Amino acid sequence: MEPVLAVTGDVLLAADLAGVLPPGIRAFFDPVFFRSSVLYDEFVHRLVVRVFRGAGLEAATRSPGTVEEIAARAGFEAGRAWVPLDWLLRHLADRGVIQAGPDPGRGRWFRAGGAVPLVDPEPVKDEQTRLAPGWLPAYELAETVARDYPAFLRGEATGEAILFSPARFRLWLNYFSNDNALYAVNNRVGAVAAEQWLPRGGGSILELGGGLASGATALLERLDAAGRLGELREYHFTEVVPAFLRRGEEALRARFPGAGFLRCSPLDMNRPFGEQGIAPGTLALVYAVNTLHVAHDLELTLAEIHRALAPGGQLVLSECVRPWPGQAIYVEFVFNLMETFRAPRLDARYRPNGGFLTPEQWTDALDAAGFGEVRLLPDIGAIRNRLRTFYTAAIGAAPRAA
Image (cartoon, rainbow, N blue to C red; front, side):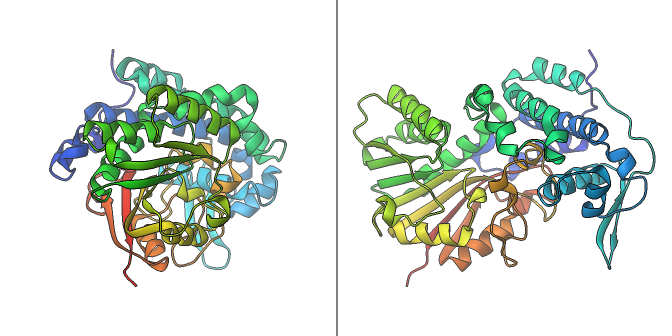
């Protein structure tokens, strides 16, 4: 059967990355991964077109307008709809489906030059099923969210109600899993980086926003394989959502029975750590997978991490990293519905928008918080000129000496 999409330049270019990706993570980014990434990007694109038409945006973009003007024409809720709508319009403009341009007096404008034809997403999903069904949890989540997108834009439902209703808990169990190939790559890259950068002799590790424990599982398995599990004084798994914390703890205790080093408790990264039982200067490693980009006040959270680390301690983040400022990334289609994702406290120096940060923005944020020795695994700065759609990296840093 012929593929839905021709093998693109990005996929062909992926073979060249063997010389750029470090050996420890090279196996995670095989041709199947890159082909699946292209397919998922196309699947999300076809869902975006469906939302664009279903939400009445063809009529609202017949004449040029800013995001705010188009939202008003379409009858969307002022304010809350702007970030997701801006992302939808930028995505379609980047694909050449609609037109866009700068207006010095009003900001960027968008216009649909004509009818935007629907393209069926199902053939893409079918090809993904044949190629690597481990990506399907991401498809199911995006497809489910797309059905409710127009209602969100019109203010008829909150993003949190759409994403986290009890009936959709299963979607997150499947998504935040090492069986979900799209998500698992962050856990695997993060585990490699954390094992490499954990100070010799180990100590205590604090994981922030541990979710359903797929990241913790990957890291503990990596430490075990490296013969370093015995170096742990404590692995403190934390999560602010009670249902996630409960499931995460159950998963960890089942996977590592009798692990005396394991501690599980709630922790809110948006509040001072000290009042939540984290003593200053006690941690060898603070670890987080796809978590810190939703910190409401990144400056505060990084300051708390800095305070909690012992001399020689390390911060390791595994993040979806935005290669270029303003680039629309397919994962944002879902997560733009979350207020914590789209509306943090902004900072002109390093956080001009909600969601994901660029390598330079992470470096500037960490530098402002008193961290040095910032490094990325892999070096997205060296990759992005060759492959624009590479988003995965671990970021390490250590507090600068006083």
